[in-house]
Image 1 (cartoon, rainbow, N blue to C red):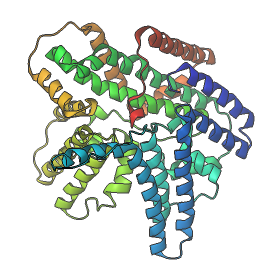
Image 2 (tube, rainbow, N blue to C red):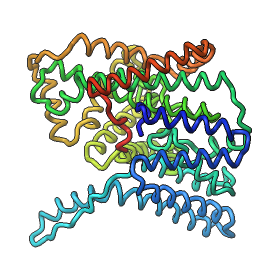
Image 3 (tube, rainbow, N blue to C red):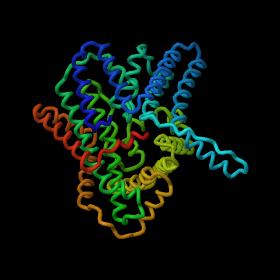
Length: 468
């Protein structure tokens, strides 16, 4: 049930109308949203609802036991149980095949080694997101910064709330749980802002992201030896904007949908390609994951408090783990390593007091670094990555892709990217004060456009971050 599908629009309409009917009663409202969230997740694969509910029960119980533990050692043991359970599930479903494959490669060097059998389990959609969200709760309780929630219903709703369930933003408990204490009242302005974010996200997804995938990205990255160097360069730029519009579009729809039901969610992107250095980039790209890695990995490792050398090691550890978080592939490790190396180089440059380049040049250089780093992220394996790079530098003549259409989508994607968080908020607020008839017409036009493009141009693709 994708956000850009007609079935989700129907689902959202039904749930919203039912929500209006029970919104003034706290428990029925929470039960409705929890039931809708479970239905939404089960639409992907009903079997995996057991996993997410099991993870929730583990962390709900762990939070209570941590808060009631008589000694620091007991508190620590219950935290370890929570982390081991969540990371164990994540390893079994996401990384076990990868581990077995690499063990078999190493074992093949030894005579008589019997290859291990990989289970090849299906990856549950959104497991990386809801696992991190649930774990953050127990870690916050352990640190003493959060009181454990006493209502299992509310904890389940915190983890499974359907707008952000399968691809974020990763919401922390202290951001979401207090909002359940607030009485819901229909607010036309909030409703209009929600619709504005939803429509903006749909345009990013179905027009720019899917359009670039259709016109240039998929062909060039799938068959790099069949295209010219110029097309490959455009595909690299195209993928940079595709992944931005795809993922930020999902986040915008999630934020807008949550607003319809009275919840504020954190923004996830702030014009990341305007970054002037790697530190600035990670404050703008996938902000909820960046802050999670900072709060629950980088700072516990010591952050920058233990000297320059340890800071550099911590940065590399965080970025390598951030890379492998995205998927069980050496290409994701390479991608994380590139960003880790960039952070180390930036901090070294800054610590030595070397001169600063003009802002425009910093942005230009770092945008091209990020765009080139997306190559291993997009490619399925190192061999394809090498093929893309060979085509890029070969100065091979073009094959006649739709240059005008590609440039038009790149320009539109660039304009949408230039709208940072504050600009998006202003645009959503302006949409909220337009007449209801205009709002309804905009919704209808976007839905018709999504249906038309899906049927006639095969652009209906899953959101990129669903695979993580």
